[in-house]
Image (cartoon, rainbow, N blue to C red):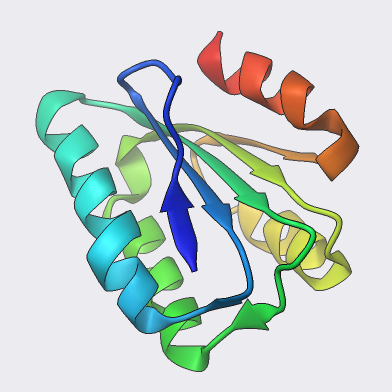
Length: 120
């Protein structure tokens, strides 16, 4: 499941992933929230956190994640990924060099630091 988080600046789309993340989660929650931010801001920041009970993505969810990132590639300003999941950390490191946005990885223990960085 993807939960949209509150208490972030208006130019920040913030989410927490719990359990199994599905394509439907992206279509219903993440994509509309990001498109809404893109309608009102030239550049958007994203805060993306995996919770302790995160168990993975369906293949369709991974495709939606890739699409939303690439379709708006030049509109990203900063991306904070908060996770202790090794394969997500590796994927972020791999794809970060393709992104024009500043992308930072944070451990779950550093979530407060990540929130501060994305909001600054």
